[in-house]
Length: 488
Image (cartoon, rainbow, N blue to C red; front, side, top):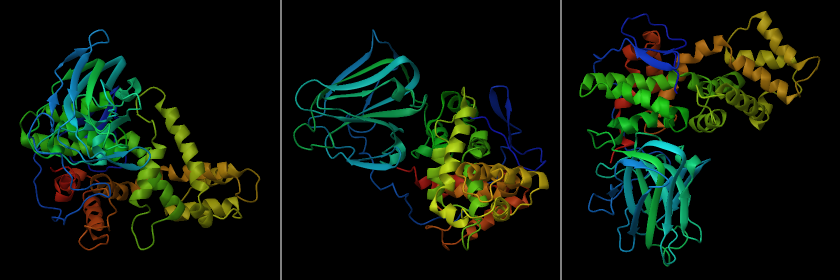
């Protein structure tokens, strides 16, 4: 469950959106649904993320194109599974390239015939499984699941692939229970049975059988738009991906989706709820303890980048946040210990990097080490906090102890004064990192500098951190650059 709060916001306006936690359930209060819609972002030039291209799924021309066959609604058990047979021989080549992100980006050429099945997972049991097996010949299908729906085609990019598996020489590709458990519930999904990557001639197509067991299948919620980001079933999981770097957990997905769905067809309500739901991911405990912590560690260690008002670049932020947030789902059993272990492991790795050792030579005294961190962070430490940090090194005269260095960096990065000082700055930066997936001064920024970032920081400060009155989140969500990421 995504449990959210708002540390550091200052507005007392009664219409400000407030995100809070009551028992196990988070909620949004004082919803303002009468926000105006000025064009706060200039229209941007053509822009795609490094892993994106212009490939789209084929037009809706037949049952072997997107959305393909529909897996019927129902509950499928081990004793009574869903079974479907098919044959990709002669089918269209709907997807020719498939992109996937695991520990890094992968791109697989799959230029052969394929079949696509549309479905929505609504429940799963302890022995949930999806298996695709050949029924004759040499067929070795590659099978993957896309988190999306078809509205005249979808972007064939890494963001869409949520699970994949390859069949071996026996021609069997299986999604076991642990893989099924990572799939989002109540979200349109596509099961793709494609050609093998390794042999585009013999074995690239053939007959197959699908078997799905111990799951419930439902009908996807309707979407009023051809742009996927307008669909609640896609929009909410995308916030998890963009800000938390993980699939949605069931409880959080259901809660945040319902926040929007309960608006019915009231467009002003939907718009306002989407703004609040999206902002809640930055304001959440999970992001504050992962992504925002990484930001503060860079700030305390290196200050701002040369000639820049920010301390960290997008690629650094992306990889480090994924590492510190690995397997962390706030409110799940044991999440605090998982997070603490991640912090300790990441901090030690962080202080061992060449850049850090260059900035903080091992010959520094404990006092010099601590004072340099506070100076880079641009905060004043009280004598007690400063002494506590210095004492992490014990009686040592140098700072060669990696574990002590890591503890001190975390002490400074986790200080409340640093979090307060950098809260709005990080909030603005995350608009670029989360929504636009780039640095503020990268193309297609018209001036290739930080004018846009400074504009939004000044506006957010002007409204005392109230992102609704500043209309900041709204502007990025409605920007052409953001919406182009998901357009057909």
